[in-house]
Image (cartoon, rainbow, N blue to C red; front, side, top):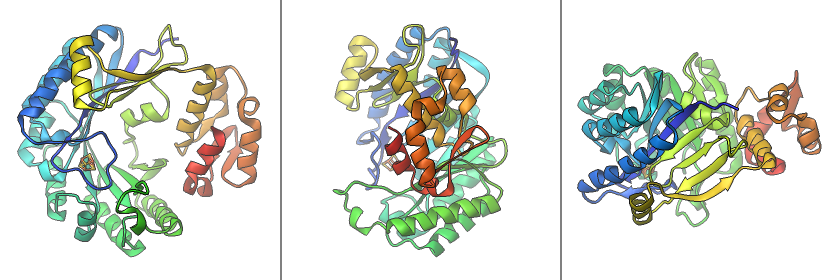
Length: 379
Ligand code: SF4
């Protein structure tokens, strides 16, 4: 089995402020020198994996966070030089950076573009000042508009905008205005996330009802289609030809390597035909001391079994609107999907949450709204 291509995720966890709803692995930046210290350790991890993966070809690189745009182009240039000297790189890799409108000045974006980064993901979230405040975002609507314009001027091939819906006090009319503003900007890609927080979070009691959130999501799906955006994954919409190649690796269960504190990896090799999955240590103390001593900071290493690989395949592929090809499943696992999951699938079809026509298993419109219930039933 050959899995030559590899997606590379680089986690840059620093933020100038920890937003109230965020559950990513994030460190609050206290002093600028922390960024260089972090990169010093991260570069050692790049060295370590460069050795292990010298036969693989990196075809997507994704700088995620945290707030990668807190780093300078000079700092990220050092990371990219290390990557290109240690790994083989495909001829035209997709290279994405997540940026926060508060730290996305034209000069910085232009420098990122000069490094070969060709895709920018802008964390706008909403165009209503009151909702930005509620989410504790530290940027204004004007900064979103300016950073978008700067990204255009810097000639990124693709701009993604992240949008959040289901914010306390948000109405469908507010959401309609957010989408209207998005369409004026006309990015190539839009990601929409339903705001979820745990019950200990201070926003929890103010979240809109499930009915209202479902109404908003339905409205988004309809409006995006009218605006010319293809809905290709539960939370992702794109103009034709602009699907995110890096995220497709997660949703199609392809191989990816995560470098940095708290990053996830999944790949298949000779010893792990169904894959191995692991996560790096979250905390700076553990991450830096492990990488310094051992070259890596793997935790929670799981050798994926045949049974687990089948479930993972099903739950990742179902997130995509094209659904699960029964033929592809059979070619990958050597058994009919109805033999593996017949009873569970049939019960979801009867509940109106799944559809299985033309040899493809897909979420119905109702299934899209109740994805978690579908996944719970399949696991
Ligand atoms: S800026 Fe993004 S990563 Fe940082 S705390 Fe806010 S939501 Fe989380």
